[in-house]
Length: 302
Length: 322
Ligand SMILES: Nc1ncnc2c1ncn2[C@@H]1O[C@H](COP(=O)(O)OP(=O)(O)O)[C@@H](O)[C@H]1O
Ligand SMILES: [Mg+2]
Image (tube, rainbow over all chains, first blue to last red):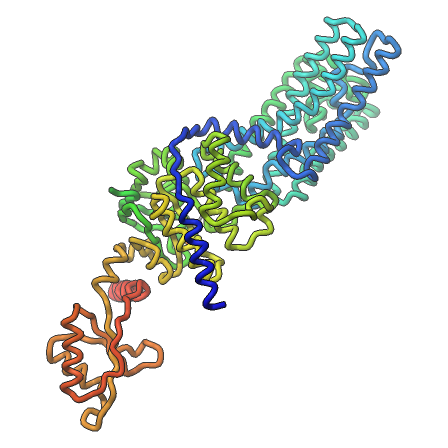
């Protein structure tokens, strides 16, 4: 063996040698291209594309679960020749919030914690791509995936409504308002979830952290709102409470500006003035999440 | 041509000075950056990548200033970190393709260069399997491949032989040599082991406590400092043969030092060979004394000894200072 090993290794060496190294003279597309590549790879990854079969199951399943009720509603509307869809477009995401929460809780950690946990982050930042590129690509990718998840059933409803020959102007307005609302929702939920996930690099903990942030805040806010509704005549207390959970924030914004009816107890949503505060809080949380993520990756880079 | 140049480069953390007024020039080829753990090797690489600002002093990589041209530097260099950095659930191919795209390579080029590079580092069929199942040696090759895939002009390899067994170590060192000879890429490779880089490197920079101990071409010190080890028999006339030879050599102006630090020998004399002349002289002296020459052998002057010399000087300096 002592004699054979060097011979085998020599053979290996010559084999490697004979291939010949080719240098690369082609284009180097730089930062913007790297950011776009990371975006599309992460977006595909959020639905398990380009990943193992196992990783496709949950996101695909949740996507289907998200769309099935819309299909049923459309089928019913067409079959019964209804004059209206069973629910407002803007209500759909509120009703389906558990599915949305589950999706973002499962995908935010896989999107960001892997690079942190396996210490891949320094490999990115030793390249032209920079912290802000990385964060923007990851944030945009998850927000886009969330938008696909939340806007797809709206599209199903809208197409169904047109097939059922419901009023075009009315349907288009409702659909457009809801699309704006889920776009905001996607940005807000992605931001908060990414921050929670990036703070807890272990994947299991990341999922738990995201679910905790979304459900505990909603549970607390809706319980307190219900109590306030029963015990206090002052509706403004109830409205201000809505500022403390992501889904009630979205509900408030769409009630104030996007023609939605409030799902707060007593259907008492914020007024236009209160709505401005809601909108500012939402935008502040989105910007804040982005800032925290940039800070997190500055620290993790090398 | 200078590939890396630092000028009075310092990096101070709240509690430690990681780099202390380091001035060094590195040319093309393979350069070893040697120093004990905590000497400041990784810190230097981070500064050279433009990712960590120096506290004072300046540095240039490929003629670009690290403080203002970090982006341009990172387009032209590759980096292999010392720690694990590979996700276990993707294949080497997928991973390296992704990293190639992050370096700016278009999709097709990224795939082609990944296949080429993985072959060059010696990964064949296994490159389609998840990295989690790889041996340490294979993982190190993947790490090297991601640093080379975009065909950089210079690579920083931080402790690439860490965790490898002797065979894996030799293979990695051979590979690193080829990165320069076959691929034409300059290399800055760090190690805390002094011995292992001398065969691989054209040039060695030794740092300790963030300070430069020595920077020289490996050819320099292997050529000029060949050491002869001599061992002789004792006779009745000369009960201490070694001493007799030493005295005789001293009488002819040749200085020696004893080899007592060598294993199993209080009877070994070391002297610096200056070509054939020294050999003849030793033979004559031993013959004149009527002693038997047990051995006379050339010992390559190892970097370890150079380092030890340097360290002794430094200790002396510290001693004098304190
Ligand atoms: N981010 C940091 N904060 C504080 N101290 C650091 C940091 N990075 C490195 N150091 C310290 O700087 C010194 C040099 O570290 P390093 O460059 O990693 O050494 P080497 O790579 O040669 O082992 C060590 O004492 C280390 O503890
Ligand atoms: Mg180090």
